[in-house]
Image 1 (cartoon, one colour):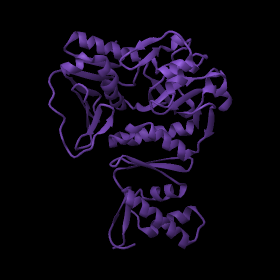
Image 2 (cartoon, chains in turn yellow, cyan):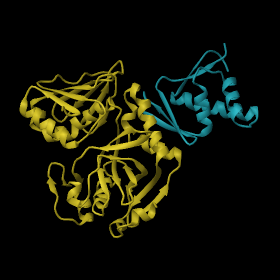
Image 3 (cartoon, helix red, strand yellow):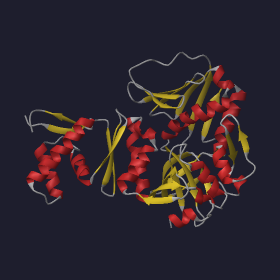
Length: 305
Length: 92
C-alpha cells in the first residue's frame, strides 16, 4: 500500500530519508499527496511587487494568478511550487539544502507540507493537542514562546494523551472538527526542561532543545483529537489564571494562530469555516501559565472544569 | 446613479454566535465585527444601495431610520477605509 504522502525522488538515499521523515509524522490525509523532489541548482527567487509572507527563513510568494504558491528557503537554497488544484508539490533542493536535511525538513519542508495538506482539506493551526484524563480534547494555540510544549510535556507526564506539541492540522470529522498532529518529539527549551524536572530526553543541539516522545513521559500518542476546550496560553509569573473568551475574541485568536488562512483565496473560506466550526464546538480560554501549574498536578482541570 | 456597495473580492467572512471575523486577503489583515456589522456585510451578498442596507438592518432590529442610517454610514466608511468593500456609482 502506498503511503498517504508519497515522496518521489530519483535519488534513493534522499527519497528514503524523506519518506521516513514523513512516515514518522504519521499523518493520514484523506487523499494521496505527493512531494516530488529534485536536487539541482536554483535561480534566485523572482523579484516582484508581491511582499512575501515570511516565517523565519521561509518566504512564501503567491503567484500572480493567486492560484499558485512558491515557497523559498533562504538558509540554503530550496524551492517548492504548488498549484491550488494539484495534490503535488514540486520541490527543488540545492546540494547545500540536502547537506542540512534535518534543518531543511523542520524549517522548509514542513512549511511545504502545511500547504500540501491544504489540498486535502487539512488546515494548519499553530497549536498543541492533548486529551485529558476524562477524555476531553484540548487545543492549545499560540506562538513558539507561549508555553505550549512545556505545558504539553507537563500534562503528558500526568497521564494526558498527546497529539502534537506544535504542528496541528484542522480537518472536518463527521460534522465535528478534529485536530491531526504531526508526530514528533515534544521539544523543550532549557527553561521548560527545568520546570518539568524530568531526566532523559534526547538532546536536539541544533535547536537548543531537548526532545521527548510522549511515551518517554508516560503518555500515549493520539493521531486525532476533537477539541472541547481551546486554550490560548501565554507565560506569566507565579500564578496560573484562566479567562473565558467570547465568540469574537475566540475567532480572532484562532485566525491569529492560523496565519496561512490569509493565503490562497480559493482555500481561505474553507479554512475560515473550519476555525468557526471549531469555535462553535469548543469553549475558549485565555490562560496565563504560572509556576504553580508545576506544583499542582490538577490545576488545569480545576481552572477549566 | 445611486451608489452601490459590494464586498471586495479579497473579503472572507465567518460568524460565531452573532459575532464575526472578516479577513482581507490582499492586505493580510483581519477584523472582528459586531452582530450589526455582520448583518450589513451579509446584506452585501449582492451590490446594495445605502437605503437597501439600512432597510435590511431595520428588518432585523427595531431602530429608527435615522439611527440605522447613521450606524450603517459609519460602518460602511470604516469598511471602505479598510478596503473590505467597494463603492460604485454616484452619491448615496
